[in-house]
Image (tube, rainbow, N blue to C red):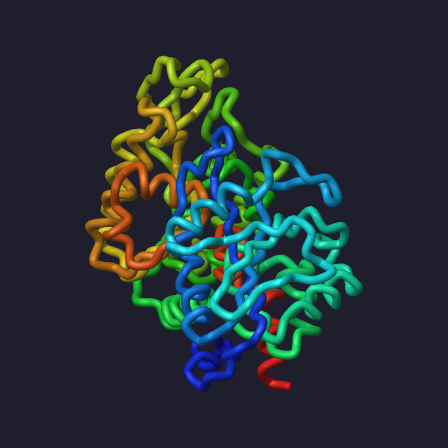
Length: 397
């Protein structure tokens, strides 16, 4: 059981009044030409900020945005648009402070957004000197960024070691509680959907899930590799031939447990990937050398949907096709609708998964949508998340 100190408990005991509170949020929102296209992560960060403000704290909020080179700020990765949107949502001024390591002027009842933490040299390497500087800025450190909890970086791990008090915000607390409760004693049968481009990046989670779930649905380039491992032709589809033995090992683990990895019986192919690519539905045995598999076929989609309808617990990370293009969206749409209709407990996480949920309008029908992608997968895998581990150690010290 994960035990950490929480922001809510500190707020209840008036331990935040007049204190400087440093909140690590996940404000890594999508931008188009400097404009925020989707603000869910900003909205998700607000409960922690409001909780600290209502308790009389002076609030500093830190986050990364994109992948800038450390020490080299860029116009594309500034948090300025986030500060503006946060001001609108909080209905109060939120100042963006660009240089903040040597001190932040903020009064109780105020919020300051600290410029992109990845501009600081040493952030990603969890530099001790940088972490100590950040810790000196605050009386209370709050991690409310589950999406970065699998990374040991200065704002997610190092600062938590040195801040006078370190705790979890309401979003992180909710993620940990919900995922732990749902996965430690899942309702059966348990079905996992894992999509994505490469088996190699999700290999350890596939192996871990193979030992836990009753059905393991694979999609995208991962499914193509499993088809290759099953002796099916995949043409010029995205796949990893070097991972065929690993795919076979996962299928063997499932088979020995009386479980299964369903292999597509039909697929949607095209000569190239594009919005205008001509789509052809065909049996999985008939893929030609000059074709790419870009989605599962309708028969496969219906079979998988039935599996989801009968599930007690569904864990979803990744689409099963190139759903961004309508010609290759049916597989992911069919599974999304099945997840929505299923009476099983559904948990979803990852950027592409959240995008699919939004596209097919099922957000209200998914029981829990995690804010994490990599962290969500590593939690499923049973790994210790560094940012959570340090909070546990501080709470039990």
